[in-house]
Length: 123
Image (cartoon, rainbow, N blue to C red):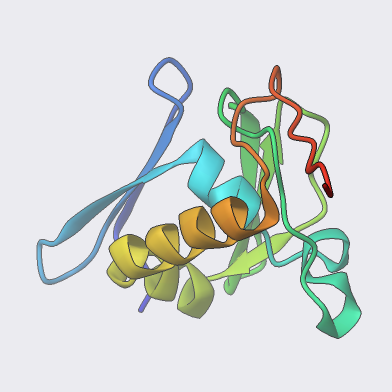
């Protein structure tokens, strides 16, 4: 599914995707950053939990051929190519994927906030 309209909104740190059926999805930069398809995040088969991305925003986007978008984030990350299929999956499964991420953060004792460092004490 290729979007018919794409809007990057830096002030609200969101990417809006509208499809031919009229459905519009609003994806936060943080969500897109933690689910980046890059090797840095995907970890070559073992995903690397992304922490401290609460305040991440966009610096830009660029089309890649007719098959993807390259998103650039203000934390310097810009290596993921978001295929149309992957963006549609992220859009339509946002609630489920976001909850899975929050659960993973909690299990790891990690935080979305870059100002918070969690330490587990073994007593």
